[in-house]
Image 1 (spheres, rainbow over the protein chains, first blue to last red):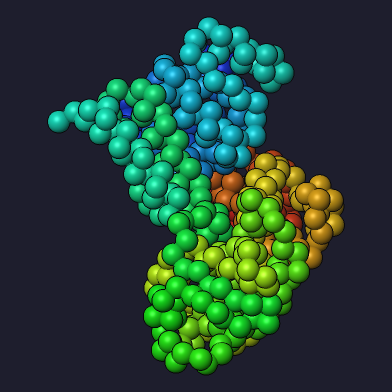
Image 2: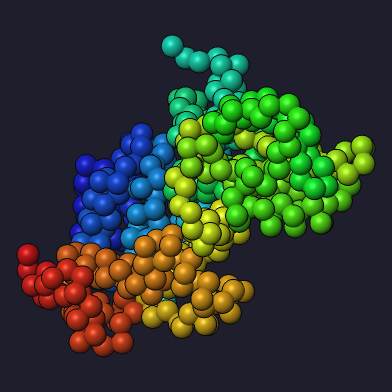
Amino acid sequence: MAIDDKYAKMWLADGILYFVYNPIRCIDLPIAEEVVFQRLKLQNGIEYPVLCDLRAVQGATKDARDYLAISGSLLTKAQAFLVKDNYSLSVLNMYLRTTVVKPPTQIFDDENRALAFLSEFRRVI
Amino acid sequence: MERTNEERFEQLFNQITEIAEGNFEFRYKPSARLDHIDTVGTHLNMLSEEIAYFNFESYANFLIRPAPVVLIFDSKGRLTNFSSCFWEILGYTPPPQGIEVSIDSFLTEYSIPLLTEELNSLTQELNPRIFPLDFNTADKRIFRSNCSLSLLIQEHRYALLIYEDFKHKNLKEFSGSQKTQRQSVRTRSARNWVLLKNLRMYSLRNLNKPLPSLKEIGLLHHTNATKIKAEFKKAFGMTIHQFHLQQRLKQAALLLQTTDLMVKEISKKCGFGSEAHFSRCFKKQYNQTPISYREC
């Protein structure tokens, strides 16, 4: 099953949830709520490790960040954020340090390394 | 038109200045380059948002601006010299020459002992301690400012430096209640806000289980139950346990909408001991049972 939403594409493969944002200049609260809603529908109550590809996203509002920090990690075993440059890496680092993200979370610029990190959590599902 | 690096740096400097002055609304607009300058700009934006969200007024208040007002007084508290703007700002008429005026007459009841305490602990440190004082204005309001004390060379003379501009927004309605003043000074404590932020994060990180007692939370955060109860309610309008319950119910509502999980499973995931307890809390919050909420 896969969802190709206006804001993101998401699908399940090999016990991992792939979540790829479409090009977005700034994620606001309605966008955040919509993508979380779609993701939870796709998961249907099952926890997955999540590969979240943020390479097409430039930023997020404070409201959206707060919402994603709480509801965005609901039903996630672990999160691997995929970024493309130092800008995103640095901003995301600050986000993770100042919010309440709970599951094991790491940031990568390489998809294979991100998947290797997540595979550890796939086994315990 | 693309901004030059010089213009972008200028914007960063402006934003830093605005933050230092307590304006957290200023935002740097990142360019398409997403380079180091944009990285710093975005960090400053997030910093402003974090501060504004938690109303860290105290942080803003403790940032020192060039001293606009100086009061010189002797060991008996009599003003011997002062910046002329002091009277104007508080709305008083300057006293005629030769009339003795005590510094205490401008301070609130709460601030008088605070100043005395500061005088008693005054040292010759190069970096004087910053402390807040409340001044009574002529129109019965309070002007609050961060101040510091210096011992002058002339014997038994002190200089009180008042750091902030006297702005209208700094004037607070005079309550006349010493208790309220004491509470508002407490509210300004940056340490309290850090504690509150930690408590909020602790609560949000434990949405899958009930929170322990206030006493246990206090032990974890090196404080006491009374302080947690009072400060959390003051900041968020509810107790930490109410906040935690509200957040868990929000998550439960989202799971009811988006999954086919049984109510019992959802209640367990959201840290409720029993389905019956969860349903009672849910109905109280949303005026309907979990099942009817799901069907809507």
